[in-house]
Image (tube, helix red, strand yellow):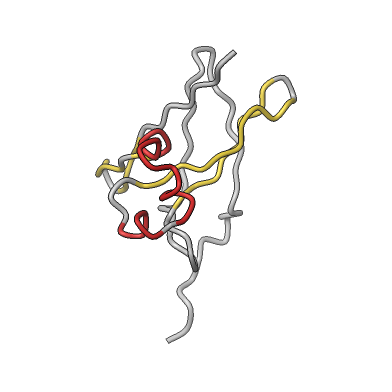
Length: 102
């Protein structure tokens, strides 16, 4: 068997804008591990044309979290960048709050 077919429209990145209350929403594939890393999603927050934050969100309960060097290094603070995914219709959904200080 060959490689599974991917979504020809998936670019590996996207862009969303928050609403007036700062809420955002995006749809993507479930993140998968790659050599040496646990599943995660990279994100950057841009405000007023300036990059304010670049980080990663991790998936709660992933077996690879305990072996991922970045996740492990965070210790107890890993909870701040960990998202719980739950069944939602035909897929999964999660909530991830991003808070920027001053």
